[in-house]
Amino acid sequence: MPEHLTPFELMQKLISFPTISRDSNLPLIDWVEEYLASHGIEAHRFPHPDEPKAALFAHVGPWEEGAVILSGHTDVVPVDGQAWDSDPFEVVEKDGKYFGRGTCDMKGFDAMAIWALVEAHRLGVKRPLQIALSYDEEVGCIGATPLIEAMQPVLPRGNAVIVGEPSMMQAVTGHKGGQGFTVHVKGFEVHSSLLPYGVSAIMEAARIIDWVNDTNTANQDAPPTDQAAMFHPPFTTLHVGNIKGGTARNITAKDCWFDIEMRVLPSEDKAVWKQHFIDHVRKVEAAMQAKQPETEIVLEPLFDVPGLRPEENGLAEEFVRSITGDNATHVVSYGTEAGHFQNAGYSSVICGPGDIAQAHQPNEFITIEQFNAGHDFMKRLVARLQEG
Image (cartoon, rainbow, N blue to C red; front, side, top):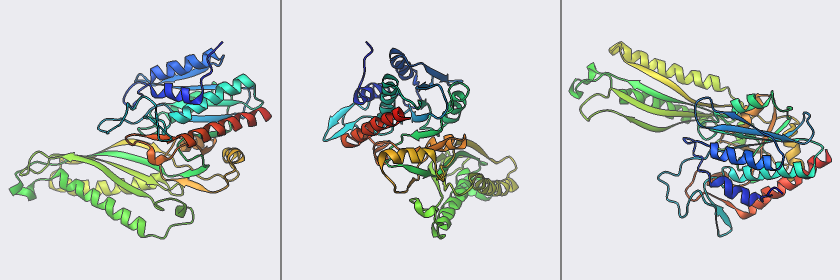
C-alpha cells in the first residue's frame, strides 16, 4: 500500500530539499513525481532548457476541461547571511509556529496541494483537480510562462487557478505588476582634478537615481484613483536596491552598475513606465556622449511580472470565496504567478496560508493555526470537487 503522508509530513519532506533559486530543484521534483506515481497519479515534468531544474504538473479526476488548478513554486530564497536559530531546511515546531525556509513561502501550500491531489484521486471527484509547481519564481516568476505553455497541450484546460502565496487564507484578487533592469553606466576615466573632461559613471548613475526619487515623490503626491487606493502604497513605486562602481577616490568612475525595479499598479501600463525610464536613461546617455562619444548606458532586463487585475464575476474568486466565506476585497503589492495565468486566459486568485511579512526572513515561519486553516481549506476544496 502506498504511504499517505499528512500535509505536515509532506512539508517536512519538501523543506528538506534546499531548492534555492540558484541551485537545482530536481531532487524535489524527482521525489514528488515518485510520490504521486506511488498513488497512481501520472505527473508530467517540463525541464529548464539550460539548467538542472524542472516544473511539474498533474491532473486527477475526469479527463475533461474545467479543473481547479493549485499553483505553487518550488524554489526558495537564499539563507546566506541570515541569522537562523535552527537548520533552515528542517521544520522546527516552537511557540505555536513551524520554522523553516519555505514554511510560509510557499512549501507549506505546496504540501497541502500535493495532499489534496492525492486525496481527490483516492476519493474520486466529479470536477478535476490539477497541480502546477514551477521553478524560478523567486527570481522574477521566470518559470511561470514556460510551465503554463507546457501544460496546455498535455492536460485538459483548467478554468480556475488558485495561487497559494501567503495571504492569510484571504481571497486576493489584485496585485501590482513588476519589471526590473540591471543598469550599466560606462563612463570615461580621468584624474578627478580634470573632472570636466571625464564622465563619472557613478555621478551619471546618480542622475538616473535622482529621477527615480523625483518620480516616487510625484506618484505619492498625486491623488490615487479608486483602484489605486486599494493598494499599500497606493501608487506605482520605483526602487534602486543595490549599486557598485568606481576605482578610486581621485578617478572619475569608468563603470557603475545598479538594479532598478518598478512595481506598477495593475490599472497602469507597465510598457509605458518602461518607456518613461528608457527615455530618461537615453537623455542622460546623450549628455554623456556629447562629452565623450564612447560612453554609454546598457540596460539588461531582469524580470517582467504582469499585474493581477480584479475580475468581474471571476470563477476562481467565486470558488475560493464559496469555501472561505470571505467576501472582503483584498489586494497586495507583491507580485505572483497569478498575473501570468490570468494573461494566459485563466481566471486567477491568490489564496494561501501564512503572512507575507514572514517570507524571506531569517527564522521564517508559518503559525500552526494558519497551517491548519490551509489544510481545512483543502479538505473543503476536495469535498466541493466531489460534488461537481
